[in-house]
Length: 94
Image (tube, rainbow, N blue to C red; front, side):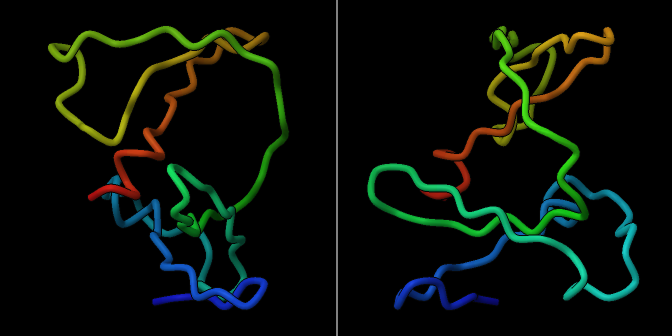
């Protein structure tokens, strides 16, 4: 699946499929696409919703904690919630 953005075709990746999570929206076209870029290549991440934007400090994770190459680190948010950080470069170069 691809999306046409500013004269360029960008491949799409459904994050719920990648992380083996249930899809929370009935119609995939109701989701959002977040365009990310690494080393001149673009990728559209299909997400259910955007919750917000925050300044965070990313902590790297030991490979013993996560075997997923899709996760590059974690952050503790202001409310104490742990947020996993996806490895955009890993997705694009795969």
